[in-house]
Length: 167
Ligand code: SF4
Ligand code: SF4
Image (cartoon, rainbow, N blue to C red; front, side, top):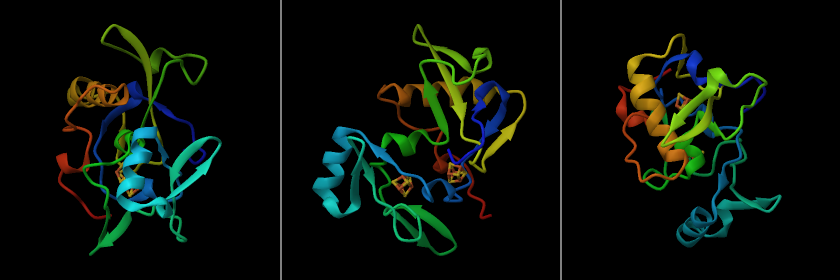
């Protein structure tokens, strides 16, 4: 997140990735150990950097992720299919505790456990309001499943599931 407050999921009507590429600019993408090993094996150490005991994807000199490339009038991720979990989750943030004092508006029960789900306001695909049925019943459960490591086939939370609009 680059500064603004996270949005509790119950204040989001809907979300659809517009493939604007904004989330691959100016972020540091953390990698899990297995993700780091895979990326290193395929692309070598030059795409990685380290800090605070973690591995991250490097950014290019323009601030964009090393794997983001222009394709005609859009940006694409050249790691498609093997995206790090942090990228698959964006713009969602899953926490075990509420980020703000009152967590009711961010809480969600999934598989017998309570989580707190927020969205990064820097994403351009968020529409505020009462959660739609699709958002509540498909998008939210899918993203929680991905976040906690269920073998979920990403269907409702990827730009591939929507008509892409250039902006
Ligand atoms: S997740 Fe949001 S910021 Fe990232 S490409 Fe999609 S619309 Fe843009
Ligand atoms: S790995 Fe792909 S989705 Fe993740 S920041 Fe880099 S270009 Fe963006």
